[in-house]
Image (tube, rainbow, N blue to C red):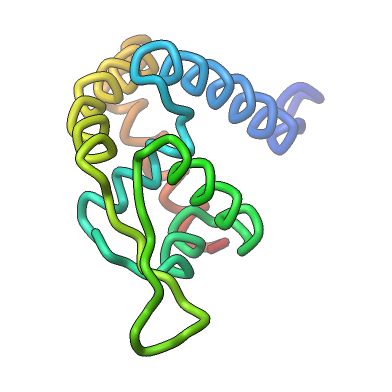
Length: 141
């Protein structure tokens, strides 16, 4: 095995950062929101009214990062929150019409980026990529 192949963690880190930076810039240009906001909007499309702690878990963030995210999304008119009737420390997060509209515009854009990312691979290579990433997700989360 060459030295180059032994740098897998480094490559993952660099590839993730480059890809995230690129997609983040594109989402800001095309939809007016960063990619992390979009991830939250996608989750809320299926779980409108979820607890803020659920959003924290699904986005793999800590509580303070989610609090900052939620505050920015409220400021940008994408979501609103209400206090939980069951737990005074908890908040429920809801989409606004603006947030729902942006989330519904995004899937074709995301599909375009997925296609662009995978266009240079064969179907069998794509299966290996998915198997590899699924194994990491299953074994390390």
